[in-house]
Length: 229
Image (cartoon, rainbow, N blue to C red; front, side, top):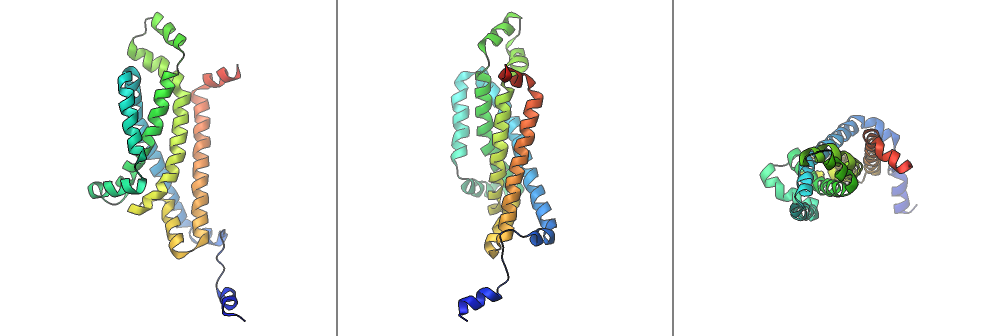
């Protein structure tokens, strides 16, 4: 028997899908998935808290829209690995560095959608509110922001799905959620570990997107009614 055939016959199977791997490494999978999910939600939440006032400021002061969106765009173009390397000497190796990077990338997506959503409010609605005596801040908070909710929710959905993918890159500073398992699988050439972590990452992105889609329909039912009409 040729040496290559003999080696293939004696080597253990290394399938891409293995339920045995899942059962034997359940604790690792749960820990990595929990870390991945927590990082994603925290990054998007912090980015949204920052993007809302910045987007409102850009809407109220149009001259600031270009510089704000442009700055966020420049930060977005920095490669994630390079950004983590730049932050590491200041914030250390671990969770903080990854979280700052994720917030930076999510900020541009959210800021753009907020600015576009506020700019897309029907001028007739604004005129009607002004006719009722609404001031600038009341107009923004009670008329423009609610009407911009569909665009804002769309931005949150996009930012969340993007962040789920970017968390895996955090493996370069030792905090990458499911990316840790992928990297370990690549190093050991263990296909089942790579595929399981990849499928969990895809499932997490899909679940988050569906939940946010349902939440958007629930908090902005008027937009659904408008599309139906």
